[in-house]
Length: 77
Image (tube, rainbow, N blue to C red):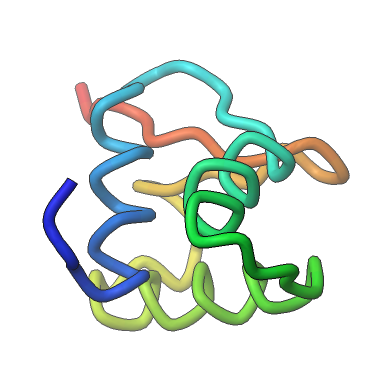
């Protein structure tokens, strides 16, 4: 995988799994563990918040949070 900024990799992962719940653990494992770095769980929350700001998705209509489990990109009708 090319070296992309973390938010881009997170978006790629979520949009590649549209309408499928991606757990926080899956994201952490795929994004950070591939380089052998440990990351705090809160770091992912901050990245998701910044991504939502860029997408103007503060209300979570594009990236839904499944509390305590993970995130899901939902297809708009």
